[in-house]
Amino acid sequence: MELIHDIHLRKKEKAKPAISFEFFPPKTEEGENNLFQKTIPELLKLNPDYCSVTYGAGGTTRDKTLEIVEKIQKDFNLTAMSHLTCVNATVEEVRAVILDAQSRGIKNLLALRGDPPGGKGDFQATEGGMEYSYQLVQLIREIGGFSIGVAGFPEGHIACKEGKEVDWERLKKKIDCGADFVVTQLFFDNEDYFVFRDHLQKKLGVNCPLIPGVLPILNANQIKKFTELCGAEMPKALVEKLDKMADDPQGVKEFGIEYATQQCRELLDSGVPGFHFYTLNKSYSTEKIMKNLSLA
Ligand SMILES: Cc1cc2nc3c(=O)[nH]c(=O)nc-3n(C[C@H](O)[C@H](O)[C@H](O)COP(=O)(O)OP(=O)(O)OC[C@H]3O[C@@H](n4cnc5c(N)ncnc54)[C@H](O)[C@@H]3O)c2cc1C
Image (cartoon, rainbow, N blue to C red):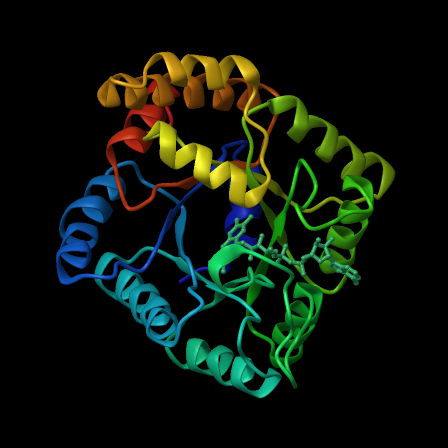
């Protein structure tokens, strides 16, 4: 399996975008069958460069993440990255997870602080644990052998009251600690990404890949909930359009494909290094978008 750092270098040389798909560990056997027998095989036909698997707050989902990443690499021969957070764990416990990942042949980690359990309130570091993701980046680098990604927020992180430019300076610190690439939070206005990229590259001198995270809208209520939780803004026209389609779930899905296609097209024209699709373990919309963009 490749280091994602090397995948990005290879794609850059070929002037092609690197494509990744994000999955989450299913909670049921049915969900697992759907992921392994339907979603992944269908998305593999699009020839992605790598994929990633999210990391939950609870113990069982955590074990599942490494299991799923290992299974994807073994059964599908696709490089897979494990997300990893600092939630509810001491440094030693996180170190044990990193070593476990290493022993399973996992070479890529997305180093995150994680959200407070339930997604609400202030984040509290566990006693003997880490408070910020840059500390996790340092720990992974100290262990060695991994390519490391971190999260970036084109609109600034929701909890950063000092403003987005301060949040971006903290992102620069994560990169300086050893992160190889940044995957962004979802956003619906490309201008947010362009301002973020300009600031990081031109003002802060960052030159690692800043990969846009793209979430195809699947469901109007679900997207409103997601954006509320992560603080991403939905343009007024987008909200109005979704409100008008309240009784047409298939119409919302098709509109989501059209919106993401247009967004990605403009991002591609601006020279982005790739896309990270938040698939929500479904293949339909991502497949259509990739085909619309002739990336399949
Ligand atoms: C691509 C992507 C994938 C994700 N996957 C998962 C997942 O699998 N599981 C999960 O639980 N969550 C996931 N998240 C959500 C993520 O954990 C949350 O957004 C979390 O609130 C912040 O994580 P972070 O790594 O950016 O934290 P950090 O980089 O630690 O930043 C968190 C906050 O602390 C501030 N901060 C950072 N450094 C300092 C400092 N030195 N001093 C003061 N303040 C500081 C930042 O400005 C920010 O407000 C993901 C997010 C993204 C974008």
